[in-house]
Image (cartoon, rainbow, N blue to C red; front, side, top):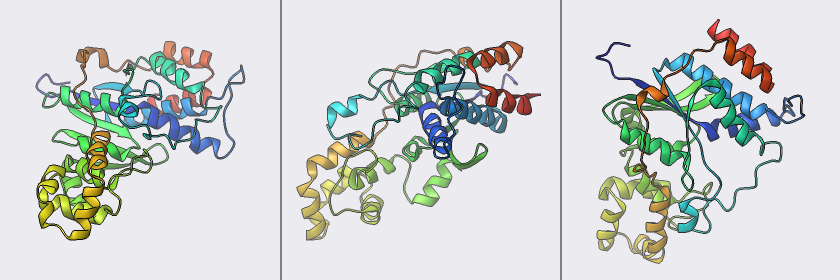
Length: 295
């Protein structure tokens, strides 16, 4: 890498790739058990996704961010946060630790902080390296679009291992009609059914977009309640507490300490020693995939 060039950090949303890989193959009854009979489908899919992304985006550095347990500070804010999500299938449960171990076997730097989501780590890494590195985030989570800024692109997994829907700040603003940060304010009104918080009853995506485009933020809308139609004003006043709470739940926290030198994220070579470790772990599909990519 030219010393005048900024590093390019590839940030992998590990849990998002693990879940996606698990359900894509388990739906067909494919679990790829290892010699001990433990399913490996999610782990192998995560590894293949990350290897392919490395080949496509050609980063100089790589980091994998993980959720650390189901309970986060957002559960403390709101009991219903993600409460509607079913427990993970029993075939997936052992693969959480296996995926982190496999990531370490590859020599990839992993990040996780108790009580925080991977999103918050990703956001904090983006804030930490803002202006000092170009960043590509690979995930399936559209919530991350609020993190877009100059030098950052979000690659949403689209199909298979190599098709992505890539967002830049410019594309987002053109497509959504608001800034990435205003995406948080829109979700404050609409809520998020997947995450289990309701927003404001009676305010859908189109109305939320209209309000934020005109008044710029949740606070701007609240300050202009007298200008709204009686029905909209009534809806917002009835759910005012939930409006502000929903905004807190929707916002990714970008202020975690990121204590990592860029050298710690250097991408190691895929060599015979790594292949041997993968063989010992029983990841034969990954070995075939890696050999086709790197040899």
